[in-house]
Image 1: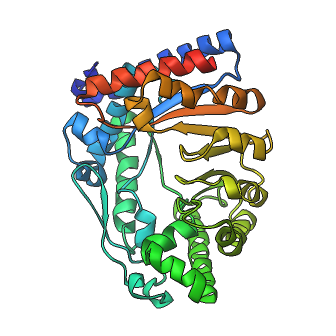
Image 2: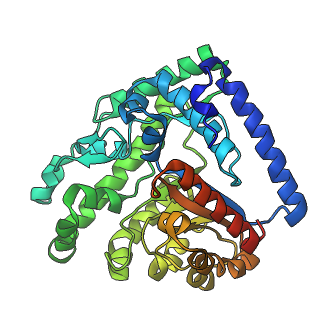
Length: 383
């Protein structure tokens, strides 16, 4: 395992990253020459909780120390290029980050993170009952994690200019989380199911409020950044779109109308993510978001089944679970990868060998297994 990234001086990080970037781009050009520009792209990524253990830091340093966060971002990109043979081409881009679920803190949720970055949620008042008054109306500059996020973003901009000659692109996050994901986190799953049966009108009001606030955030963000308009495209991440935890009827009745509104008012939704199973609602989802060009397909879905349901213009980002990537036998990995050959004949396909963390005893063995699975995927899919 090449640990060069840990010891490089900060002053050398950008040049080192650019060298890795050019090397990876050359590798991609060679693959395209052999297999064609439309070949299957095979990528992977480290689960955020994996980096602190590997690099020996606590996540609070990334969340609260902008200079450390900038350098750590570059080190992680360099490390990945040095140790993983996937198709990821590193880019010197960093989004301001104060931890997962910052957007839910707009509604009064308090979140703490363990040293490795696992979010821990304090109970929200909504868990006691459906009461919209407990959600408040956020202040873009003052509510929840927003003061930390804004301070982090502005510090990163200064650091990029002063330490990296402006070559580190710093972005401000967008509000991507969907209304169902937020509501279930605030209210609790059992409370949500009770509301569906016993308080459907109040539930619709609450979900509508969450969409109203997402749209308001988009305009507040636009004003803060001095942009001329909203971004031309949008993205929705709604992990509780997960059958059978919700039924297709719940999706159609409570969620789908809100998605149509996001498409109409926030802009073209070109990407959607859920960690759950969406096969039973996929056709309706694409009907609400007709501009989706790449659909995240979690391991709990069958890409082959979705291939039969959805038009070929929709590309798939098909994910393989990390227990298979890092812990499965070659036969098990083949069983997951082989059906994707037919999918790739009909639509654009990217395969993600996902969520790398230390499942084996060592990181050396972790990355050995990852690279072995990448090689197998290339052999099967021609990527």
